[in-house]
Amino acid sequence: MNKEYKVELNKEDKAFYLMKNSEKLGHLIYTLDEDNKMTLTSTEVDPSLKGEGLGINLINAGVDFAREKGYKLDATCPYAVLMLDRNREDFKDVISKDFKA
Image 1: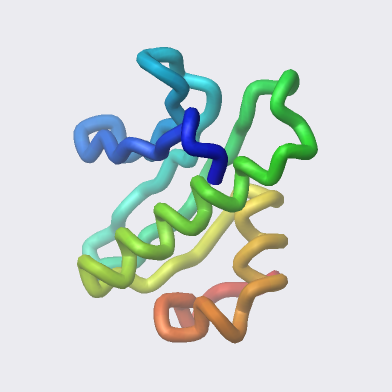
Image 2 (image 1 turned 135 degrees about the vertical axis):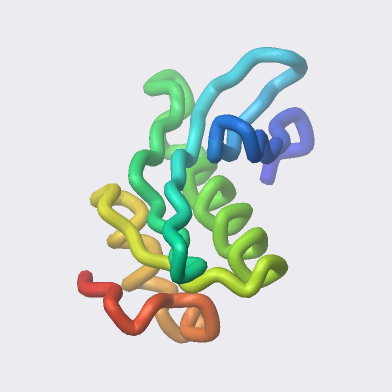
């Protein structure tokens, strides 16, 4: 990821934010259920950054968090579904058995 951007976790919001300085330029929103399933529900990046590959950084942050916490991943966000499916081999340890692309 470009060094001027970073991804920050906000557990209270159940969100990862793409930040540049103190400005939020994107997000990955998730839910957690009682079975430790983490569902990625929304991924957005500022339209001015389209094509820079920053959305996958949000997905990767979510995957890393799920691994760290022992959660299984699912997704309802179309972009997250596409990225989990496209990277299924790399993410197979955290993808929920219920995940459908």
